[in-house]
Amino acid sequence: MLGTPRLLLRPVRPEDARVHRTLWTERDARVPAHRRIDAQGRPTLAEITADLSRSANAVLGAGGSPTHEALGLLTVERRREGDAIGYCGLIEEDDAEGPQIAYELLRSTQGNGYATEAAGEVVRWARRAGHDRLRATVWDWNVSSLRVLAKLGFEDTGTVTARSPHGLTLLLAMRL
Image (cartoon, rainbow, N blue to C red; front, top):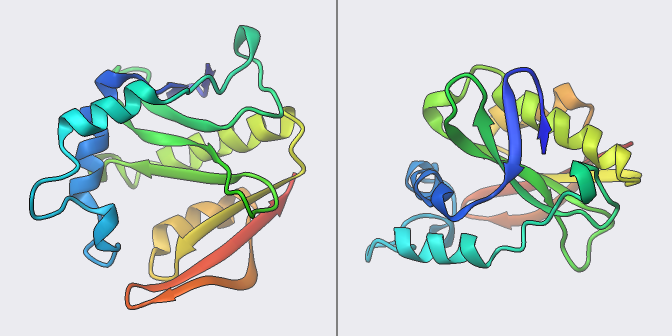
């Protein structure tokens, strides 16, 4: 497990499905429809639970130490309250140069520095695991995420990875 004084980052468990479903319901209307709850209420809690159950979130090596192959999302849990508030971790795309950091927190917990704190711990983990570069993609309108990434040392590469009616997807990167 990874952690900070305020947060624990642990492998995702099926019981985290309620938090993940809430994240789906809270997404900005500018997020593409396939990343939001649809008119039929999908993904359902049961579908998200099944997805989390199938996840091979063995992202930490023996004794909780990072490995270069370590990828996956970790649940972000507040230590004092003992509640799950979102996820943070590393994902990989087939055509990408290095892993990508990803995070999402419940709206009720935003504005407290948790995203910066959790993502900072994931950056340190990636460095210890031997990664030399991290990437991040973010919507141009997502000012809060852009601010978090800037605090961590990510820089805008000037690359737009996607253009859509939902906005521009920007590529940021950092050397570790």
